[in-house]
Image 1 (spheres, helix red, strand yellow):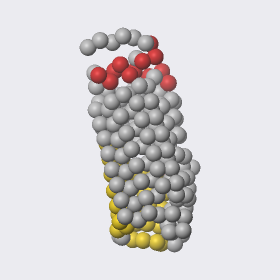
Image 2 (cartoon, rainbow, N blue to C red):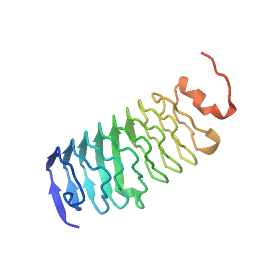
Image 3 (cartoon, rainbow, N blue to C red):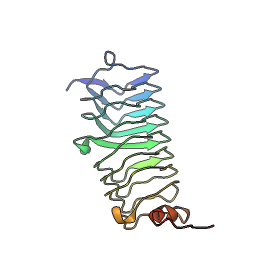
Length: 190
């Protein structure tokens, strides 16, 4: 694997298949960059920060994100179906991840802060101690997911079936409890 960049800043770059070099990026900052629909197979991002970037539709299978931080980014429809989820450690803040998927991913202690997680697929994901602080989870799918000690207290539109997920010691607000009872079609008043 060729080292491409170390401690560099990329600003306002519209990457495409010809301009993006696959390789190792370490301690780099990507600001207002466009990775839309780009195939990132083989790229490795270690301790990199992404600010106001658009990665919607990017192909990330075979890519590595270690200690990556995404802030104010669009990652709509990204399928995080990585074969080796040890290559994925990230934090998302104020990001739009609508229609993305993390099936069977190990996302222990993952931080989702103020994110749009509408219709995100977390099927069979390991989300122990994950935080969903200020996130919108409308239509998100949690089936056979480990949500033990996950924090949903400040999330909105949480709806999941406790019988289909492990939720021991997960944290919910009183307002969020209705989403746990949704399958019973109860009328829960103020």
